[in-house]
Image (cartoon, rainbow, N blue to C red; front, top):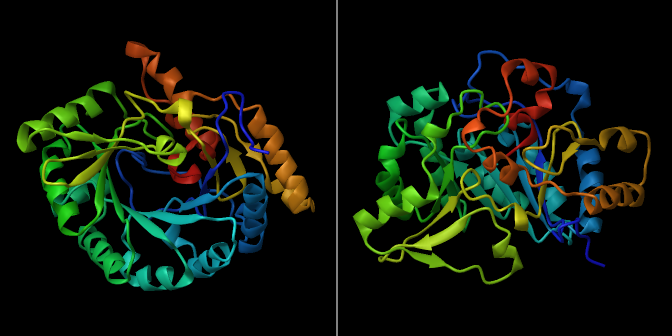
Length: 345
């Protein structure tokens, strides 16, 4: 029997955070100076992650994406990937990384059974990278993208958060770069989620504006139609330029896709969030450590998903001019699970 929520959305896609730590401090994600970290003893072990993933797979999940923070900071991550890749129910095992450590680990990740990687890259300019990420690591990220290709990864994606007055003048350079390295670029509208305490509407470059800009330079843009339920629920709408170069746009801020959303997020300490905008999560660590079986965890997951009615991005859009940052610094200090670097993107 297919597991669906109150709006008929299936549970198929799990974002699995393996650490809340990150080695960058990107302005749109971690703009403040200090952060509250999850207690080390609360972080799920690999055995615990494997069991909870078994429960999600039994409930219908067939796509798992490892996130963070920065997932490559988690010690012995290839071993976890090897364990997850061996599970027959997981059809797609991917990882999102900022790329800083990717050149060192790409071959090990591929050998462990990881299917795909997505690398975050917001600029091709070294000085601007320092301004955005507050670290001088652009050369490491570019080397990581090269290493992923050398390791044999196919279908690599590059994620770019577009911010007006910050990096929106690099749209064409990033498209050219992604084509040259045989990756697909995905532009992401600047979102008012997690720790984006300095978010404002005027910094958002919308999907409509991006398409207009690209068409002005490259000619007519053709939408790549979604051909199945999986592509219809994907966060990015895909497009093709006249030369055949494809790219995606994640328009969660101005054109939410809540109606087809099949994804949820598990923090590194076992809190399960049914929506990126949700303020409250469901504690799976407590029953897991109390000895619940995989079947019992599955039943717990199924009960929660059937009651899911979240449409967070649509509700944010409806605020119009009243829309501001989702959380302030005081809220984030009281509950670090509200942070994007804790619950994963």
